Image 1 (cartoon, rainbow, N blue to C red):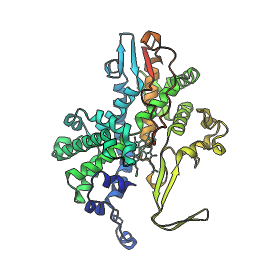
Image 2 (image 1 turned 120 degrees about the vertical axis):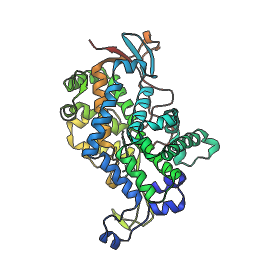
Image 3 (image 1 turned 90 degrees about the vertical axis):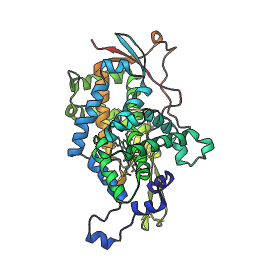
Image 4 (image 1 turned 180 degrees about the horizontal axis):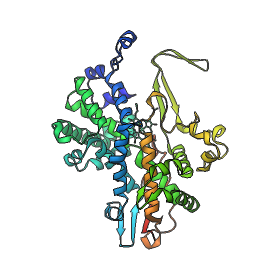
Length: 407
Ligand code: HEM
C-alpha cells in the first residue's frame, strides 16, 4: 500500500525502485544496514516515538508544553474556535478547536515554525484534505475530487518550498524529519520528491489525534455521570495547572478505559498487507502478491468478544475485563511491524488534554443562553464515506462547549 501511495503522489519509478529496493538475504546477513530507505524511515519514526530520549524530548519539550499553553483561559478565549467569549465564559466549537489545535501543533513539532510561515494557509489545506482523503485512496477523478487535488497540491508545494530552504533556516525540525530527509536525499531524491514522501508522513502524523480528542471529549460531556466520575479521578493529577503525567498514566483507570472505548468504537481502518511468501492460514493458501485485508471495525464490534452490548459505548468493559486491551480483536493502532508508532504519544496527549480541559475549566454543553436551540444531540459518526482511521463526525455536526472559570 505504501508503494501505491508514494507513486500516486508523484514519486518517480526510478526513486521508487531505490526506496523499496529488495536486498537478498545473504546481503542482509553480511550487512545489517541492508534495509531500504522505506524501512529505514519506519525505523527512524520508531526511534522518534518509542520510549527513549527522542520521545522524552518530544513530549517534555514540545507536546506537553504546547498542550498546556493551549489550555489557558487567554488562549482559549482568543482561539478562532471560540464563538463568543466574556470574562466569565467561552463558547467553543469542539471540532474546530481540536482540529486546529492538534494539526497545527503536530506540524510545528515535526517540521518547525518555518513551514507555517511559508504557507499560513497550510492548516486550512490540511482540513480540506482530511475531509476528502477517501477520494485519494479510491482514485476518484479530478473532476469529482477537485478540492482533494488542490489541497494535496498545496501541501506538496508548501513542503517543496520548505525543503528548498537551507537546513540552517529550519533547524527546529525534529529528529524524524531530519533523518527522513537525509535518507531520501541519500537515495537520490530531489526537493520535489522529498516533499512528496514527506506529505504522506504529515498525513499519518496529523490524521487521527484531533478526531480522537473530539470523540473523547464529546463522550464525556454528553454523559453527566461519566463526566463527574472522570473529573473526580483526574483532579489529583493536575496541580496548579500542570498535568502530572505519571499520575494520569498510572492512577486513572477510568480515563484509560474511556480512551480505549473511544478507540474501539471510532476506529475504521483495515489492516492491509502484501503477502510476500506463500503462507497458510487456517488451511487457506495465500500466494505471494496476494493482499490481506483485516477490517478492524468488524473485529471491534464482534459480539463473541465484546458481548451483547458490543454496539454500545461502555468504557467499564475495559475495567471489568483488563485483558480486553490486549485482545487480538482489539486493533485501534494496527498490528505487527507496521503498528502505529504514534500510539504512546497519542495516548499521553489525550490524557493531558482531557485532564487540563476538565480541571482548568468548568465545562458543560452550551445551551439556549449561548444561542443553541433545544438539547444538543450527540454527533453521528460519518459512515457514509469510506472511512480511513478514526471516523469523523457527520458534516455540520459538532459539540458546542460552554467553558466557565473553575471556582
Ligand atoms: C488517534 C491516534 C492514532 C490512531 C488511532 C492511529 C492509528 C494508526 C493505524 C491503524 C495505523 C496502521 C497500522 C498498521 O498498518 O498495522 C497507523 C500507522 C501509522 N501511524 Fe498512527 N495513529 C494515531 C496517531 C498517530 C500519531 C500521533 C502519529 C505520529 C505522530 C502516527 C503515526 C503513524 C505512522 C507513521 C504510521 C505508519 C506506520 C508504518 O507503516 O510503519 N499515528 N496509525
